[in-house]
Image 1 (cartoon, rainbow, N blue to C red):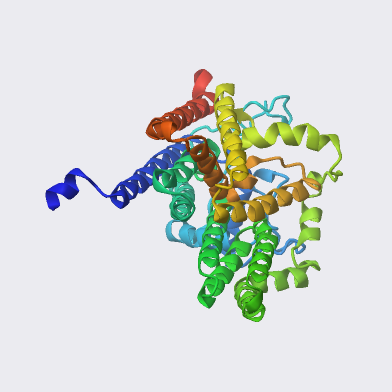
Image 2: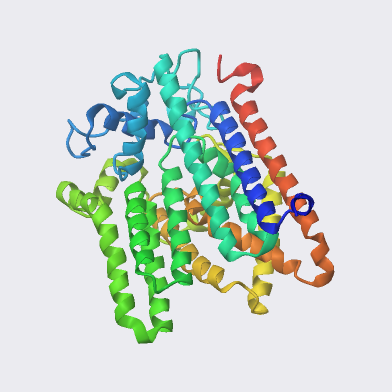
Length: 469
């Protein structure tokens, strides 16, 4: 029996090995990204670090209207993150307190005079000059900085693991691995999982909420599922305001459940109250604090006032949504590094564009043939549209067409991709090609990651080590 098991591993053993390989790959490449991306050459990384240092040294949250308690900007940059919910920064501050004296991290800026933000005329250059000891002069500063980046890597790995668990509930056979492979190898996800940002925690908690919503669909009569979902929702709301997209999604999901189970409306309504109540117990204090300090529950007016330089109100019919928004959303979803100025070779974008287009055709075919997984259809329609609607709403005020804002639903997008490809290979004569197709995808993803690292190294360290000289 042992000999037979050894020579013919079960499907579960193969999947477990696949999960381990996907996680190992992600940890390796995300750590490489964390090592090669110079400090602060990532979106708002100085502002995120300033928030962490503020909490670590003062053991309190910032109050943006109080000059004595407002979050200072690092390097004199115009952007601060004082409007952000505090969960990530509190956890990161605990880590910093372990390794940095007094919890403070000193950073010394040497702006690159060629960059437009520093008075130059170019944006295709590093934002800072990274000479020896700059911008992190002390050993403890560099160690704390690296520890925070590795914390982001750990959050990203947890997210990948959650995607793999969710995919097992949505897809059959070897296709269960494809969503995890896609997420673990996506260049922009690797990049954002390797820098200091609250995105990693927010994305992880959003994926956990989606997994729990899936469990709720599978077992709608378990009150504990509503309680757990409420706790996760509260934590997500304490991580980043982008988690607000979960609220309309969950409302629609509960509405559909109530419609299908009309004989148990009262039980579902009470369960929904349990979910909402647990979320409020976890996160309600923060919204009350916003109301007391800033006059509104979400702190929206405070954010507009403190980031007035970024406010660019525009209607949905403006040219922005037909040009800049469309042009930048997809490339920055695949991979656009630094402060959105380091682009990949165009072949990488064509590869991902072709892959997503083919997969979309498969999804349409599966829906038309009524073979599309019902649970995936429900989750993707409800939460995918809600997340994209939130991105549109945000861009009505701020011009931020960044594809990383789709990462809270990246697990569902990856599952859609796998389901679409599976549908195209559904005819029996094509099923033998499944291993070749998946192998080809993996090869393409690995090549894209190699090109990503090479692009970053060339941009920051090429041409006479311009980032270090």
